[in-house]
Amino acid sequence: MAFYQNWAAQFKTYNRNIKLSFMANIITQIGLGIFMVIYNFYIRKLGYAESVNGQVIAMTSLATAIILVPAGLISDRYGRKKVFFFGILISGVILLLRSIFADQGVLITLAFISGLTMAFLQVSGIPWLAENSIAEQRVNLFSLHFALMTAANVVGTLLGGGLTDLFSLFVSDLNSIRFTLIIGAVIYLIGIFPTTKFTELPKPKFKPTEKKTATISWKSDGLKLIVLFAIAQLLIGFGAGLVIPYLNLYFADRFSATTTSIGLIISMGQAATALAMFIGPQVVKKVGDVKAVVYLQLASLPFLLLTAYTEHLWLAAIGFLFRQALMNAGNPIQMSLMMSKVNDSMKGLANSVNQMVFNLGWAFMGPVSTGIVVKYGSYWGYAYVFTITAGLYLIGSTYFFLVFRGFTVKKEPSASAKIS
Image 1: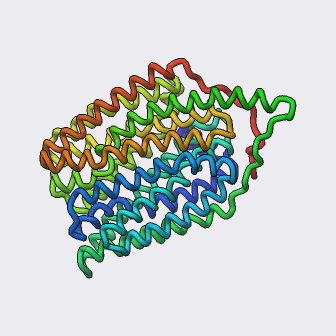
Image 2: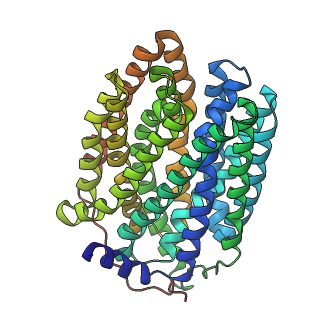
Image 3: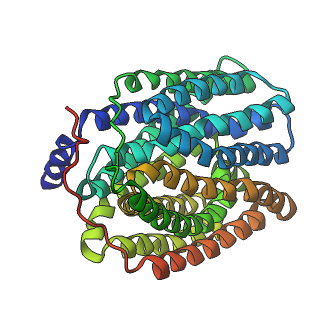
């Protein structure tokens, strides 16, 4: 009860913009969860080779990586509200088109465009929350944000698997997947409505007498911090890009799991992640921000290796659940640390660079992952890519600790970000 009351009290301190943002994210994540859990199977049912799935993932991530920095700058300059609105609108339409078309070239092109449009949402979410809060709120705020997004994705994942199996009783397997994808895209588009109620914040301004020196100071320090955070995220992104996009295929290939059971397993992993988000702030209180991130990431590695080498579905599911929860529990803490160190005028850029390097990992490693699995098969292929991922996670966590161990989150005065 005390735990619930503490988080309820935290939620009451958040302004209207944050609450509307939660609503928009929940709706879009349900739609995206439905779409993403079965889209790989859509490619397969169309009769394309496994490499096409790798190309789709790679092109989506590459497009996102290319546009993220410009998107961050646009978000900083023209406001988060416009970026949210048009980002959801255009990316939702692209999801609908991806659900309908079947030509390989068109699918890859739409995947690229999808990566471009969704990038605008990726770069705006965290800066929007940061601008509407103060430093003391952010670890809990970001944890709740990621938890709600993950929980919504759980609902979407369950619906995706369940709806596909339900529709398959009445129509062909291909059409059952297609109908489910369309439903996911429509739900995603509904998320546009809360964004119309956002209240844009006034941009921070320097006094004329101090503008020049202040700008030079925070820009040089800010850019250095952005690069340091980006290196850490690049290492993690390369590891994640090997396995995360193909987890549904892993369970299908190695264990011949059905779409419903795959949806259930993945949704359980997301549910575990959502719960783990609430543990993060408690770990921060005991060991500090940086150690909390490192400890949580390192704790996930044994479970990643368990998933890599087990031949039993239930052990693979357990390994997946704990890896998913522990590895992702540190994300809100890391985001809070970065947002507390970067000036408001560079928050969009900081988040976009962070997301860009992570997506570069997915873009480059997607084809590598599918190539290894095709060459070595469903057991050793996935064992190799999971093991490589574990090594990259270890290097990334070690780097993060060595570089950021002296960092602390400074307190901020209560800002004008409080909007009722």
